[in-house]
Amino acid sequence: MSATANPIANSSGSVSNLAVQNLSGPYMTNTHGNGVSCQGSTLTITPFATLQDSWKEPYESSYLDPVFDNSDTDNNGVLDNPGAILYHKPVRTGQKTNHSIGWGISMNVTIPLDKRHNEGCLRAANTQNELNKQLLANKRLDFEMARLKHCAEQKRLGVTFAKSSPSAQICADIVVANPHGVIPNHRHSIPK
Image (cartoon, rainbow, N blue to C red):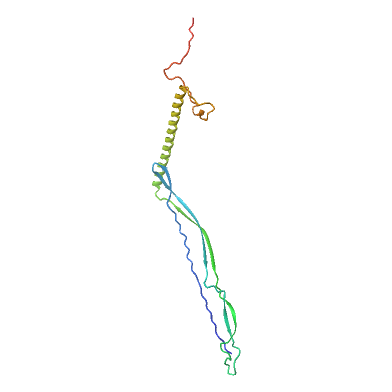
């Protein structure tokens, strides 16, 4: 009787390097007009998902391992049928596909470091906003004065919108009185 060694050694491995790049971009910038732009802190939140598949080609789930005839020997112990295969037995290879899914959230906070610049810019922004409010108030005053002038002139001429007109409300609140220094027509009673 003899024994035949049939050593099998399989080795496999894989390495995956996954990197998530966090791009914060520029600071958040608020523009207030007249060239005043202030940068503020920025929070960037980036969700991500990754999918990875790996497999071996050609895929073999098993292989056939020959089983040799070691049982039939002559009187001297020598095999009668050396190398004769009795049958093949299936052996699993352990080969498989790998799937991996990963997900997460990457966050980045960016803060300007020059506090004096930020405070000065915010003061300039407040000044610009107040200036914009005053300009708007001036425009509103110009509009109301132009409306007063044109409506008064038209009323003196006896021209008005019809009461059923949607535009009648434009001059509805304008009252025309006698101009300064002009005496209106009037009567006095003279006592006897």
